[in-house]
Length: 601
Ligand code: GTP
Image (tube, rainbow, N blue to C red; front, side, top):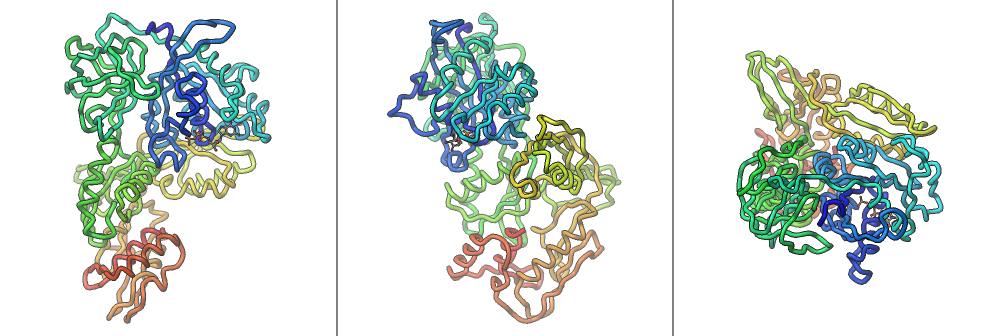
């Protein structure tokens, strides 16, 4: 295809603002999917995505479109719509799919206005020099206030409120006009057709039948069906088994040229061999320089995952091996815990990533799991000049600590005016530093903070939602590290540390953590033959203490508060007969007590 006739774009939208519905409508209007084939939300393939209503993996679809009247009318164009993931944990994947586009449709629910996540992705798009078409969606809703939000969008990106398009993905109103504007406003791709090929990988998906399917945007040159390919970050070469475009099913094609978007299949079995952000070139005519912007995904949040039934350990390992094929950001290694047995310490991009993996393990692989409280990665410098990277609090180095560094993020919170006070209080309580504050419109405020990541992964989002009645939205991106007054708190049972409960916390919060955990464990651990102290300690200093008195009692009789379904599960487990006991020193503790203590926190 002549690059002049190609338009590559993505849709930036907050969850639930209607991206999938609009994408479906476009597929239908361009004739790529007919009414009969029309599956709801064609682009979201995985079940979990559909159920949770989020898009995790980006994909691309090619659509023909001919402008009906006005400028550029009558000529056929090729539109490549590149789907971007919509959540805070996947910023890097978003940035790579944006890099594959010339333009972005900024889709905003006309009854809600723009949200923090959308704002963050809008800034990413502007950094990538994308042209933006502002679009208000769901104008069929009685609650829609398109005039109000058109003002807000114009204020944000410049331009006239009248330039903001108004559509309904549901009824289709305004969507053909949007397709026309995509052709008119977005620039065609530019690239050197005679240069050695360079293609940007913006997504990489494992398919059980085909192996890894790599989605690319050609920048320079051509890749042909007979080429051998080189991945420029590693120099690894792969045979090209198939190449093509998605429209909406994969369709083979003989070559991909400048500006085209398509897929490559090389027979590799692991997405780590075909990484998002990497540059693909041809072995026979290799490019000298890779495209910019490549970086390795780096886990930000760690948690221990343990099978509730110890005999599931090999199954858990197999399941993680399988998920890894499709997830270059998932990291894990075996770990043993005195309290929980054999499991894995897993690294994730963020909390949502953790939840998705955990849910897939439970649902697709039928595993019952317990996870330890998530923690961030700490860098500990000792006075003997050694440095330790700590991904598991129970492996905190011994020795005199010179400094502890923790990751920080730049957070953006959007909130109605009325809740500014509440938001500030939450952020301040979590060691946030206010960077700035702007009014997007008369009643909506953008607050920018730096916050320790550790404070965000611990129920920040829930707090924010409940204190602002669901109106505030949050986005954040990594922003280096800071040294802080952090200590490791151990929980001791009869003077033996229980590894699963060790935590690294700010000095000012150590006491509260100690009291909370010792109280909780006292209620959960049955009485023993002898009196057992439960203590919280920083080093050798005891900061809290409870006692379990002698004699026995039922575990769950006292397991109140917290998650009902989890408790019901525990009861079922117990009914199954086996009461798995763990010995911590001389103390016999049912594993269920540890699980309950972890899951109700
Ligand atoms: P994610 O996939 O989670 O990012 O969500 P999404 O932005 O793709 O939203 P989706 O298309 O799933 O739509 C969210 C909800 O809004 C669904 O219940 C849709 O039926 C509804 N919706 C989408 N577009 C419109 C519209 O134009 N009008 C009305 N009334 N409802 C819409």
